[in-house]
Amino acid sequence: MLSRRHFLATAAAAAASPGPLGAAEPLRVVATTGMIADAARRVGGEAVAVRALMGPGVDPHAYRQTRSDIAALLDADLALWNGLYLEAQMERFMLELGARKPVAAVAEAIPRERLIAHEDYDGRFDPHVWIVPELWAEAVGAVRDALVSARPEAEATVRANAEAHLAEVARVGDYARRVLGTVPEARRVLLTAHDAFGYFGRAYGWEVIGIQGISTESEAGLARIGELVDLIVARDLTAAFVETSISDRNVRALIEGAAARGHEVSVGGELFSDAMGEPGTYEGTWVGMIDHNATVIASALGGAPPPRGMDGRLSAGL
Image: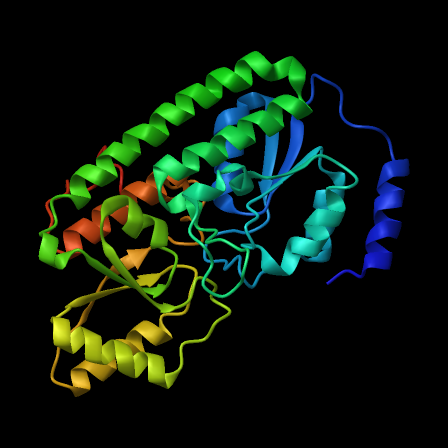
């Protein structure tokens, strides 16, 4: 990680370089996660050029900024990050950067009463707000406000784009609620690799069980696996879900432990938790991510979603 001394020297050099791009040029935006970058692209449109630091399969809890990341952030007109201790290894750097240029922690715009308290850190909250559309709408609003502040001459376009995207957010939220509601009540238990789906559980009235805690930095021990095997057998749970940004070894250990007790548990599917799908795909957008998760969960647990999701755009073979 870049030292504070090196950071200050690099920032001073950047400040001495030519000023920001002219009004006709796109606003240079750097976002930490793919979800934030997607919101910035949808809301900013042609007024922005957006780079995401973390791509598909990247765990933001453990991510450390590289030298190229630091250069990109120092060169950006606007930096967007989630906050709420999601980018734990980057937090100090982002706070220092905010003293020198426009920086917005978009999830921290959400009122505290709508957040879930973090189980491991006093005064911290569950950062996985993008999992539920109604919460993510607040973060999209924060992206809009940050873009308007950084590029006021594009305000009308940015606000119109934000309104259109927020309509999409509401639509996929309605879809998720509808298809998840087709799962029999007794089967509304989501067993995943880590506690990324707490807001999902609260929003849809599901029980959510994560093998690891809210942060992937907390390892699941043998005792925890044993406790969950007991729970699975006692409650006759038959599906567990892996996540694209986290190793599946704990889920596999759980399945093997249940099998040793004569109880069959299958992988219900792969969910997007802390990262989206591949760029250029539908699942590589935030709307596609939510559509995928709701469809896969409902299908695996006895619901009746459309085979290829909300608009038939999901990849085949789900």
